[in-house]
Length: 219
Image (cartoon, rainbow, N blue to C red; front, side):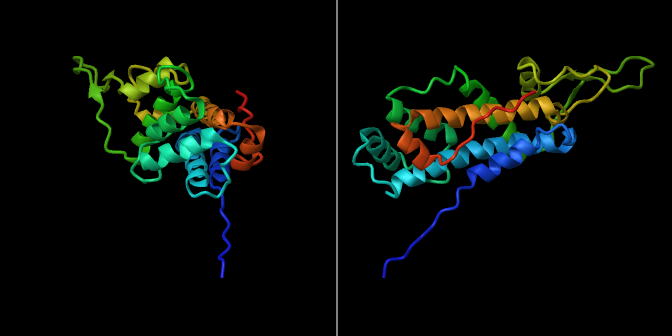
């Protein structure tokens, strides 16, 4: 007897969690960091859902050479392997769907690189080493000599302020801001919309990204 199956798309739930971290009533110290992590999860889930639909032949691809090419390339590159990096998946997907090389030096992929780096720093966190300035005679205050590289990237992106020299500031301190949460969610939406728009027709967009809402979060 034929077994019937259904699939729950987790990407929308992950996006909803990330969006909640951008609200004006959110607690910056907690919800902004949640928004960053779940925005990154949203991208990965959306990419995996598209790949699963194409690779497992849930969809009839006979009228879409681009999706047939994606299926062949995805199987060859073993993109459904859990150890395959997200950026590798995106490179193969855009190569098949748009016949172009993913330019990681352009937006939204520069933001994607920072977003994934922040996610990894939180999820695979180890004690953060802070470099302290040499003590000044008669000054008991510990002063941070320099910030970590990711913290500096947040500042350069214009979404986190430079902390006072007399305050020790970790990466999580830099991330715990509504501006960072909004940036993270909007960056994730931009990447997933690129995938959505790369599909060959509106029918396929609705089939593989049903009722998607890419409305950006307002400041």
